[in-house]
Structures are given as structure tokens and as C-alpha cells.
Image (cartoon, rainbow, N blue to C red; front, side):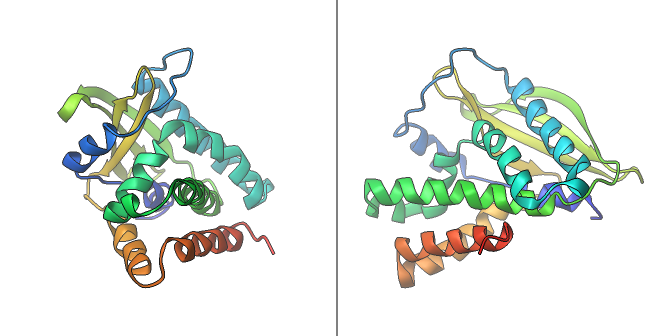
Length: 213
């Protein structure tokens, strides 16, 4: 899918809404003082992706990681994503393990994105509209278009967490779900080695992606 795969490989995150709905009831998010609309949240995130790509030739992967981290953290509900990845193992972990995994999960997602955004080939994002989704969610529809005119539909599913909009799902027009693949990979590790090993594995992957010795 040419260079469109650079961004798509990160943003393809798909949850089962029944599981998400259960998770939302058990998670409290501190609201920001000023409410940001779903559209503005996603467009700000996509603008940062483009900025990062445009200066990739003159920046190191670690620099891109530091630039992207606050945007990834502020756009996505990382704790819900981490909880969905662990599934039933989430309830079996203690508070410190959960905190450590959420941190590692965020760092890995950001490092993976920073490593992929290594060049710019004229891609643009196009806003396509906002619609209502299931269970009180909002869907922000966008497209990623390259110089050849190839288009990929990217729909962000957002939920309002006490006056704080966060993305909890991202769906492409081809339906690929990277989160489902990660769930399978992570749970295989969990069933054999446990949460501590998974956290160490993610941290090692981050170090490799960021070229940290």
C-alpha cells in the first residue's frame, strides 16, 4: 500500500464495543480544563504526523519519539487499549504491573510510529466528516492520500471520558486490526511467561526501535 502503510500500520486499532463498554465503567480519566472536540483532537494528531514525516530526514528516531509521545498519549486512551490487549489477564495483574504495562505499551506504540515515520512522500490527510457511533461514541472520518491519488479511509472512534475526548478505536477501509494481532501475540507470552516478561519484552523492543544501547 506504498507509503500509506507507514501511518496505517500504527493506527489500525480495533476493539469489541461490548468489551470496551465494560472497560469504560471501571476507568476514571481526569478531564482537561478545556474540552477539545473530537474533530480537533484527530486533526491535531494527524497534523503532527505530517510534521514529523516532513522533518524525518533531518531528525533521529529518538527525536521523533519525543515529539510524538504527547500527541499519542493525548489522542488515544492508552489504558483502555492496554486493558483490551491483556483481556482476562488484566484482572490478574496488580496495580504496579498494570501501571508498568500501560507505560510500556504507550512507549512501544510511539516508538513503533517514530521508526516508521522516516520520510515524507507528499501524503496528505483529508477530513471527511463526523457522525454518531454506537454506545455514545463519535466517529471522525478521514482519508490518507498519496501523490498517486491512492486513498485509505481512516475512521477514529472516540468516547467522551468526563469532558475529555479520547480515541478508543481506529478502523481502516480494509478492516485490518493490528490490535487483534497484538492481542494474540501478547497473550501467548502471558500464558507462558507472565506479565513481567511481556513488559521487559516491550521495553527491549522500544530500545531497539530507538537505537538505545
